[in-house]
Image (cartoon, rainbow, N blue to C red; front, side, top):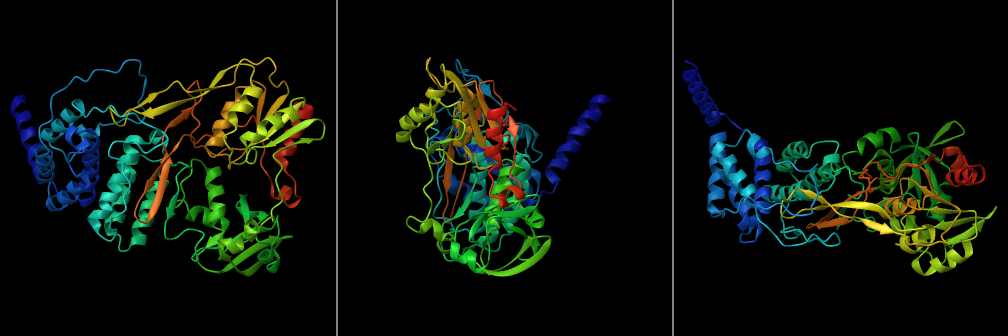
Length: 549
């Protein structure tokens, strides 16, 4: 009796599988995964024997006609058969001396996808086990993935071309983004959510907005989305004549970039903006989350501050708060080179000091200005100080090595990495990492202070990790951008985007992505401090140097 029931259940299940209707989103989500999987796993596809982009364009009409799971599964199965036989090489020998990092790796969809027949799942599993093997090394400085390319000649008004574009991007991230496991949302879900917007896009702008929304799901501060025909330097984008920082859901002006335009509107450092075009800063914070990728809230607000000070219109209503009163000014914003005229005037900017002696025998180094050739003079000038403040609230110029040799008494490893393992796409492996310092009895004996904030991104965070090996280092400031590793650049016909290409960790495998470099002493600027012209972070560092707390 039990056998009869089991047979009836199997028959009933097969009938349901064959007759169940499926949606376009379900079909395209599954197809995206299969297309990307075959692109990197199938021996002939990965070896470049097919025009794989064209193969997708050709198969999409057949997929669109499939109405049931059975029909869909048959289309995909026949497609795989048409690619030719996959040679049996399993089991693939495990690599020697390789320690895998598998938090990103998940091919369970091969067996769990409701659209796949058992036969189709078995074919995909066989391809995984007899996958393409490459001798190509991953180079973090170049775009050297197998069959990863840039796209230029694509008609974004064509639905299937839009689908191909999203498929290509989604699979690059699926197999080669080291921090996929740290996303707020599962990457599979992001694909499901974005497909309807891509399919239904009526204009190129609709498509770009959908693509931008997808890039934000990486939660990676390295990610940007730039339009080639729409940069901030052209005549379409107008800018406020200054820069600002969001504090307590208000935007406080921290720098004036265009004196005449600022003077015409009586705008100065310390002014507090509460609304732009009648939207509060709090509302703008909520509205822009689908347009800005950031590893954490600190960097999101930093990116947002610059975005909301740009507009497509030259007439912008700005509400200011001063002495408890709200005043709205109808301002004229101008193109970037006009609103930021101070930056373009020859000799207009005050020359920043690379390093200097502060009061009480304390040294100060601006890591965003100092360059390699200045390091010997800096060391000679500051070697007898009781403390050196390295201001890294900026982007350093690659000067970490000589400075670190000066600070460290001995060699020490400060960072290890995860790299894509190209013989098994989606898997990553640990590397030995980077060391700094050398045996040096004459190393710097004073206190080492590193100032960081949300503008400390990538190389700044990596350099801070390096300086921490000195042993007498104290990090002062606030949460950094939380994004480290090289940048992989992706170019498309009308736009450019990018993402972090390798994983960066402390030697004990602690994460830095999204977390950033955690300060030993947390201190943030206040609106009052900015209005008074104070550097509260530097002040706190000097207090620590003198008092030890």
